[in-house]
Structures are given as structure tokens and as C-alpha cells.
Image (cartoon, rainbow, N blue to C red; front, side):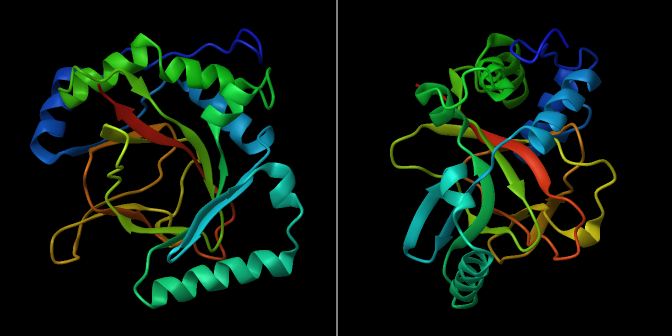
Amino acid sequence: MTSDSKPTFRINPDLDRPTLARQFRDQGRLQIRDALDSGTAEYFRSVLQNRTNWGLAWQIGAEGPRALRFSEAQALSEDERRILKRKAGEAVGRGEYGFVYDQYAMLDAYLERWEPDHPLNRLLEHLNDQPFLNLLREVSGIHSIIKAEAQATRFGPEHFLTEHDDLHPRDARRVAYVLNLTIPDWKSEWGGYLNFFDQHGNIEAGFRPIFNSLNLFLVPQRHSVSYVAPFAPSGRYAITGWALDF
């Protein structure tokens, strides 16, 4: 890495892109292992784990979505956080939509200059530069992709994101992505899986949050992030977002 302000960003040059493209065409989803150069992945994992001031995002049925910045989230008491989790869980128990997780709104942070020298600002630029966009175009076959939205996420114990399809009334989302930067050897018992569902509600595929893996899937597609167990020893760190076209 050159410096914190301008970290090197390298995609793994050994990726077999034609094979990945065939797999994506067949399934409409794909997990790419060792997506980035190992040094790049380790660097940004450290940034998420040690240098990111996490806010909080949630939705409780029809209430929300809400997103708090770091200072606002820090002002919440432990009781207030427990109540949020409980209410979100109760909404899901009624069959309503809900989520709770830690987040850092990378685009807002970039445009509003929350922390001008933060490495995630540079990462957002890299995600919108041609090397990463070309990887998305080549693997997905959607050559009209022009930009990538991004947020940093941390799904800690008792966090979850219920089933949805990522359709948005204003944004032309074509491909969703999850760049996993969590701890190695994430155990299945800890949860935090990216699950995909068929029309009967059966899980068609489940992607474990493997360090330095890049999950790609077409929008719309029914999916969720499964509940992270209270005994999980760490958060599920990732950069998540969508590739958009015209």
C-alpha cells in the first residue's frame, strides 16, 4: 500500500473471467473467490475493522428506513439499541419487512466530506473506475454499466436483513454486489449468509461470507442476509452496493 490517502487497489489478475461469465449467465448469481489482490483485501479489511466510524441502519415494518451517522448512533443507549432490535424482530415475526445493521454511507461521506482523508473515499473512487466496472461488465454481460453505488456494512450479533429484491423506483440497478471483507474462516453457525429464494420460499443458494470473495447477482432477485447469531465473535464486514446503467 502506498499510503492511507491513496491505497493501492488491485483486482486479482488471475481471475478466469470467461469461465466466471459463463457461470453467471447460467445462474444469474456468482461468488468469486480471491477477487482482489490479497494485499488490497487485507488493507481494506483493516480499515473496516479498525478505522470506520459506524452508524446504524434499520427498518421496522412500515417505519423507516432510517440511517444514523456515527455521532447519532453513539448517542443511543444500550437499552435503546435493544428496543430497536426487539421491535424489528417483532415486525418480522408479523411477516413484515425489517433490518438492523451497522453502516457507513460511503457516497454521502464522500460528497459531504465527512472525513476527507478516509481510505473509504478512495475505495469508492476505485469501485467507480474502469478496472472494477470492467470486471462487472465482463462477468455480468451487461456492458451498459456506468457506475457503482456502495456502502460499508457490518452485520454484528442479532443483525439481519429480511427477504427483498433490490428493485428501486429511481435507480437503474442491474447487478448487486457484496465484497466480503470479514474475518477468515467464518463459521456457518454464526449466520450472516447471503441467501437466495425460489418462488416457494426455498433457499436455492446460500453464500458464506468468505473473506475476499465478491458476490454478484442480477436485480431483481429475492434474497436476504440471515440472522447473525448472538455468539458470533465478530461482525460480518462487507462493501455492498449496485452497478447501475443508463
